Image (cartoon, rainbow, N blue to C red):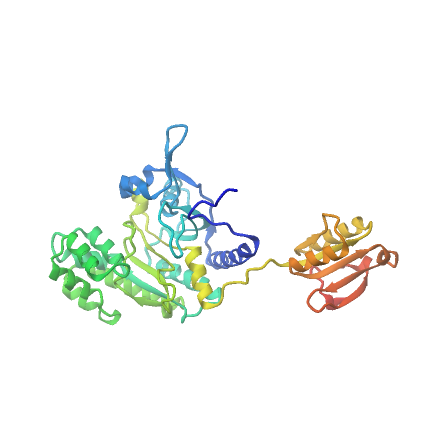
Length: 432
């Protein structure tokens, strides 16, 4: 007997039915906004991650050397891969480029609530537009996807910030390691206060500066001009203006109600450059961010391409399921079947014809392939939640009929075999 690998999961049909429904909902919303599906490889060169984050990042990945001596890694995220793809065909692609993809990723880290070593995400990205409307559209796709799943504004909240506001404020305090300080802000809600301020002082702030900086992060949305006055720099002024323009655009997109300005939201990845956001469970029952996203305008250039603004988000399926389950909108985990064609005696040719006709109408149809008894077939039909059972028996066929059984009510009726299923693609019990 072999055990499942730690941090990896099995999904049986019932759970996959629910997962597929959620994925299809998110992807359908993205398609409605014009996002096109792409496919990407499971392996990339390990240097693609080490060059951006240092060799130590490889300790957090499934990295190895293949038989050809190449250093490879199972992809831990999609953004570097799509950046590589954009660079490869940058001159051929019409702008803006709007891509989406659902697939697994891998990170060698300790499993915890909503986090596994193999995990699934739906990535949605726009390349080639720096307009605030692009940021707003990403937020709109995210919000519309959640509401289509049955969630309301009382269930989730987008905490929105701007990396250049954080970076610009930090610049006013002198020689500060901005990257390290922003990483500390990203950990603010995950560690205790002492550790948080220690990280800020390690980044170059004095204790008093760290506390002053942290107080600035609590500035309310209607007082952001105070940050412009405090910093006195074009960087902070332009960042505040950009954030306000994005929020104004979300009003036009109908999703402003889901957005809350929160300058303590930083996003840990270093490639973010502008507006960033994280989705949270409004009740706090799901204790970590459900997903996040933001703008990364320098990544394409960093991969050798022409300067190309970019913005995107990526809902992780594990944390998204936690939110949906908490809100009571996670789809029922059960298989569904439209028809089961039950055979009694030597009736396979007719039963097979009926099954083919029903499938041609787009129905989910099963039929006996194990030579089971009448009772065993009926039990199986019940186990797969068949809505209707078509009983094709020798005696019925002698009378030119088949029997239709409604599995919910238990009602039965005889219908002419030549008329079933007829021209209707999804005939119901009541039609006959």
